[in-house]
Amino acid sequence: MKVGFLITGRLKSTRLPKKLLIKIKGKSIISHMLDRLKLAKNIDEIIICTSTEDQDRPLGDLAKENKVKCFFGSPDDVLSRLLDAANEFKLDYILNITADCPFVDPFYADKIVEEYFRTDADLIRQFDLPHGAFSYGIKVEALKKVVKIKNSSDTEVWGRYFTDTGLFNVIDLDVVNEKHMKPGLRMTLDYPQDLDFFNAVFNELYKEGEVFTLSQILDLLEKNPEIIKLNEGVGNKFKKRFISQSEPILKKINKIKTALIIGSGSIGQRHIRNLKTKGINNIVALRSKKGHFKKLPIEFPLIEVESWEEAIKLQPDIAIIANPSSYHIESAIKICEHVKGIFIEKPLSTSSNSCEQLIETLNEKKVVSFVGHNLMFHPLIKNIIKFHDSNDVGSIINIQCQAGQWLPDWHPYEDYKNAYYARKDLGGGVSLTLIHEIHLALELAGLPLSVYGEFSESKQLDIDVEVCSDLIIKHNTGAVSQIHLDYLQRPSHRSGLVTFEKGWVSYDFRKMELIGQIMGGDVFKIWSNLEYDFNEAYKDQLDKFMCLVEEGRLKHQFDANSAVESIKVVEALKKSNSSGKRVIMDRIERFSF
Image (tube, rainbow, N blue to C red; front, side, top):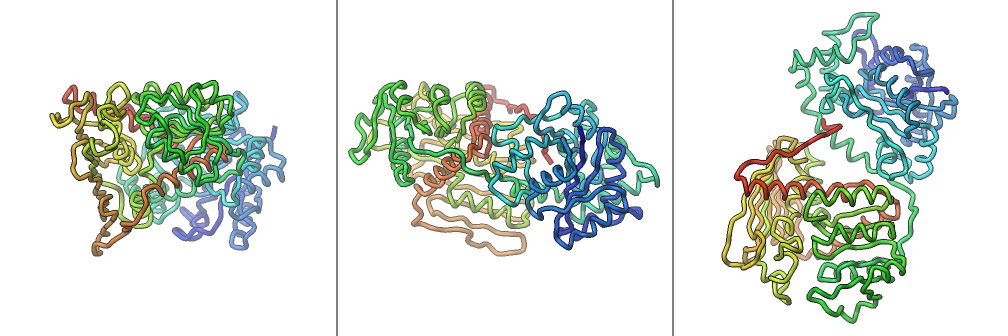
C-alpha cells in the first residue's frame, strides 16, 4: 500500500501575502514544514498540492529544492485536487494538512496510518492536538465517494462533507500524551500576528540541521505564555472565517412528496399552511383530538388519521412533530424508521436524558432531524450575526435579553390552564416554552460552563409550572448572558442587548428594529421593518429543513444534537433554583480555539 502526505497550499493569501514563501531563519515556512514531515516513517511520498494558476508556480520550484513532488490541480475545488493527486501518484491512502501549519507533527501522522491499518476508517482526525499540529487521514475510496456527492466547486474547507452525511466512518484519534492535549491552541500562519508567534518560537528553539519537537514547543509556551498572546487576539477571526467556509453543499438525493403532521394545534396548522406554499399537497394529520381543535379548518384538504399504523401506511417522506413537548421524543422514535426527515418543534424534549435514545436512533436509521428554533431565522437575529461577522467588534462580552407575554392572551380562543405550556405533565413552564432566548444565547456566545438562576412566584396565574424565571449563563468564551422569561408581561415584549468588546447591538421585536454602534462611530439603524410578517421566518425555517432532507445531511446547525444544550441549561436552572447555588456544566470540547 502506498501512502502519500498531500500538503494543500496556494500563494493567494491577502491577509499575509505569499505567506508560504516567507523565510524564518533563512528557510521558507513550507521548507520547515517539509523538514518535519520527512521524519515520518509511514509516509512513502510527500507532495505539495497546489493549483494550476500562474501565481502558484513558485511552489513547484520550492518542491524541487526540497526534493519532494508537486501536483498542480483545481484552484478552488480542494477535494478534487486531492483526488486527482492521489490518482496521479497511485496512492492508496493519503494524509493531508494545509501548508500554513509548519508545526505539523510527524509522530502523530504515523499514528494515523497505524490507526487506519487497524480500523480501515474513512477519515481519521486528531482534534485534541493544537490546531496546526494535527493531520487528517483519508481513505482514497472514501474521497472518491465524497467527490461524487458534493455539489460545489469550492471545497477549501471540506471536513463536514465526511462528518455531516452519516455515510463515512470518522474516527477521532486519542492523544495519549496529556501534555499534547491543547485543542484551544492555534499554531497556523494566517495573520501578521501569527508570523510574530512563529518567529518567537523559532528564535528560542531553532538549531540548524535539527527539528524541534511538539513537546519542546509546548514546554516553551508553558514557560513563556507571552508568546501565545502574540496571536491570541486573531483566534476568533480565524474561527469565524473557518466556520463560514465549512458549510457543505451536497447533491440532492431525496424527494419530498408526502408530509405527516403529528399535532394539529396552532403551530401544527401553521406548518400545514406553509407546506402548501412549498408545493407539498400530500399532507397527513395524525390526530388525537384531545386538544382545543377537535376539527381542522375546512380549507385544509388533507388526510386525517387516528393511528400510527394508518399514518405509516401512507408512506410519509417527512414528519413534523408539533404535539405537546412531553410527547416529542416518543413520537419521533415511533416514526423515525419510516421517514427521511423529522422536524420537531422546540423544545426538543423536557429532559436531556430522553434525547440520547432519539439521537442514537436518528444516527442508526440515517434520518435527518431539525429542531424548530424559528427565532434563528428572523431578520433581527440574522442581522445580529451578520453584524458580528462583518465588523471588527471583537468577542461578545455580555448578552441581556428578555421575553414575556401575559399567558391568557397567548391563545385567547382557549382556556390557558388547559394548554401544554401551562401544564407540567405536558412539558410546560416558561423556561422550556420560551427556550428561544436560551438557545439564542448559546448560539451567539458559546456553550455553557455554569448556570445560576431562580424562579419568582406569582399569584396572578393559577398553574403548576414556573411563570417567571431569571438566569445567568457563563459561556466557554468568557461571555455572560442574563436572561429573563415570564408569562406575566402586558403588553408582550421581546428585546435584548448584545455587547461586544468594540461595539453593541440592541434589538426589539415590538419595534421590529435593530440598532448598533461600533467603537468610534455613531449609533445607526441596522435593520427595521414594521411590516415584516413573522411567518416568513417559519417559511425560511421550513425551506432549510426540506433542503437538508433532500441532501440527506444528518449533522447541521439545527439538528437534534444541537438542541440538547439549551435543555441542559433549563435543567441546570431548575437545579440552581432548588439549591440556591451555581450549577457547573460538564464540558468536553475539541477544536475550541
